Each structure stands twice: as structure tokens, then as C-alpha cells.
Length: 223
Image (cartoon, rainbow, N blue to C red; front, side, top):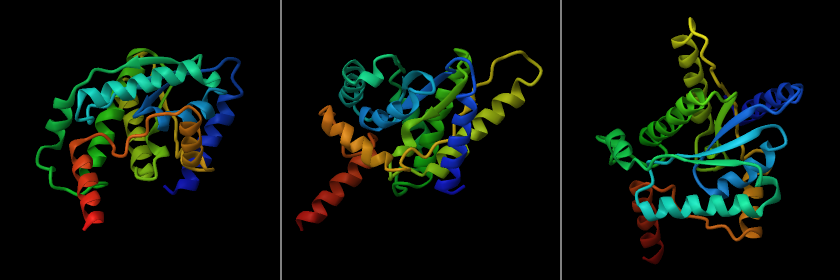
């Protein structure tokens, strides 16, 4: 799935949403405030948004809290974000480290990252189903460092799995909202909003492995 195809799929879904008589409920997984900023700005016209902050990959509790606090501050300051709700996911780093066991030495953007997307999106999908949301998606695809094809593949599979497991029940299954939020200058817009609201922009994804990679590159520049 190319980025253009993903965005076309996303726009088609929005066209269908806009035909509804009321805004459907969207659970938006958020990795941090800067990535969430443009996503919320784009989506709030179409959905009743609840932001789900769930990131067991973040290595330090202080970093987890700082990112969440920025999201809460932003929601109070940006006019387009004032109607969103924020749900704090449990801080569960042990789940990330269990998932990453045996993949500690893999390079960034490889299989370990795929499994990390899967871990976070899986919990988002379950919460969306439990709380009877109409749609779920994630801000992750706004980053140029994240694989949007993987993210959408995982989200689509999660929706399909839920439907197959509940095909004989009356359970409400949320629809996965396709996304490649970096398209149409989405990433650039997130940088602009970060500057406008003086948002904390971290320089690594949050996990210990990305931190090591960041430190390694910094040392190489000084040599």
C-alpha cells in the first residue's frame, strides 16, 4: 500500500463519515503531543475524538508523564482541541521489554518496531471495542520515521480479527481509520503547531533502543 493509496482510502472514509447525521466516536492513539497536534486539527471536524495515550515503549516514567502533560496542556490551549477527551493508558514498560526480548540488537525501523506498533495498536483496538467506539486509529503515521504501510496493515488486521472473533455476537466492532498523516505537509504542519504552542518535541521515539541510537549518532558527529 503506497502512501498515496493510504491517503486516498482515508479521504474516502472521511467522505462517508461526513454523510452521517452526527459525528462518530473516534479513539485516536497518541504517541506524543507534537504528533497529535495536526492529527487532531485535521480530524476534529469529522469526529468526536478521544485521545488514548498508551506507550509502554517509553523507557522512563518521567518521559511518559512529560509527554502526557504536554498533551493535556495543548488540549486546553488550542481551540480546535478543547473538545477532545484524553484517556491515560497504563504505563506498562514490562510488556514492551517482554515483546522486545531476542530483538534487542535489531536495527531501528525493523521487526522490533513492527512489533511495537502492533503492541500499541492492539491495546488501542481492544479499548475501542470495549468502550464501543465507532473508529480507531493512531498518530504514528505522521512521523517520517514510522512505516505507514506497516501501521495500516496492522490496524486493518486488528479490525478483521475482531470481526471474525465476534461474527456471531452483537458486539460493536470499531472500524480502523486508514492514515498517512504526514501527507499533504502534515508533518510540516505538526512542526508549525509545535512552534506556535511551544510544545516539547522529543528527539527519539521513547524506547531505550532509540535512545541508544540517538546517542551513538551524536557521538559520531563529534568525531
